[in-house]
Length: 503
Ligand SMILES: Nc1ncnc2c1ncn2[C@@H]1O[C@H](COP(=O)(O)OP(=O)(O)O)[C@@H](O)[C@H]1O
Ligand SMILES: [Mg+2]
Image (cartoon, rainbow, N blue to C red; front, side, top):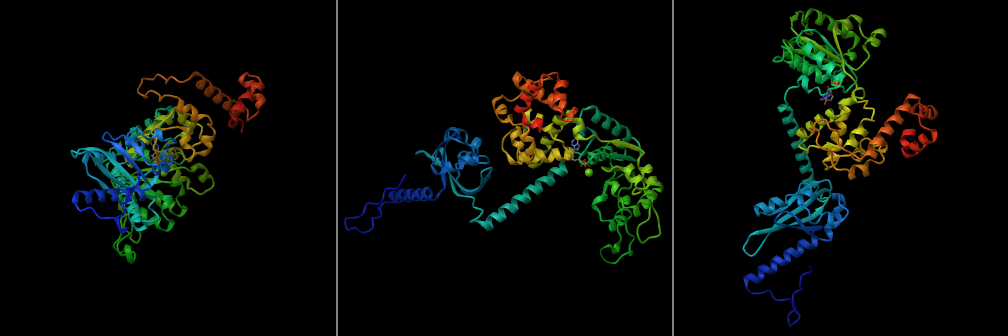
């Protein structure tokens, strides 16, 4: 919409400025609008209901980054559906412009301006949104730096708040209903009632720390402190002071006043010795003595302090092997191994994958303020194929990353491509199927499996069994075909369809 150039005067000099105030203001308004229109990278109009009714040619450059191919997917939709984090509706509701603002969404960060549009009676009938500058990071360095620092601080503060408000771990927060998980919980409940030393064994990320918290919370010591020492994280030279404390005057400098050790801090409560397998040999004897006598001797003192602590130790290492290699004292091992609880690896309790993912997604959304996501049935099928060497910690990280990287509410295998590329490859047809299918009924719909195209279900069953047969025969296709009671040709046909199976 180009501005009418001013009519040159008869003498060929500058055009005259109109003399009445109304005309001047109108001219000013038009000029300002033209200025915005010329300098803005894109403009959009929304109606009073918040529906996008028009976008400028310039605006179209942003559509791909917002996830739209065609203008018709964008125009005609409610503005917050198509532009995450927009405040256009607020402008319509309040009638107040937001002249300068930074809008951040999946398409990037933008310097934007939003102005309400009024009819002759002054009623708001819509709003105009302008992208004044795309990616202002480069031109507005100082402001952007401050902005990102503040956002980071805000995130951090939100996290801390959520952390403080989080209810204490209970044994019920150990998610899982598989036989292996139920057995872990049964043992944990039983041992919580006693003062016995507990040894939690399991790969990294299987929930040892969570379970230690839970056992403490379910024990008669719940109201007393729960104190953790992560042995692998403390330098060997500081470990002794960390455990047993330092007497006043033993050192000069920061420790001059003396310091309580973790045993003392845990008095009356529970001491959690994480990564006990990393305990330096030199300290193992002292630890054993403290455990047996329930007394500690702070560094630089010759007095013993009586303590009353319940010990829960955890390790992902093979303690009997460390004992055999004489890197872990046998007597300490027996002292700790009073009630061992073995935590299963995630791949050994895949039946719990859905419940775990749901609980983790719930926690992720609560802590981060992101919307709660759901996983499609294919996403679960795909996730079950991953080896999960990092167990539930890895699952959590994957879900967190995927949630951060997309605004979609339902996560399909393709969403995992950036985080677990080999998994997305193993699921080549997932995209099409996922899109074509209506969302499954909610899990509450009592046990009934969601109805899905029979062909998909059959294909999945075939895939799973072929995979199993190949695994059982160490990849021998002839033997696998015999096991499956199908012809070799039929097997090769399937392998051609799903090349990842034969890989
Ligand atoms: N059974 C479980 N239910 C829910 N979350 C779990 C479970 N096990 C582990 N997690 C989560 O996985 C992550 C790793 O658990 P953690 O207890 O630190 O494992 P470990 O100490 O065995 O390495 C944590 O975020 C924890 O909350
Ligand atoms: Mg741990």
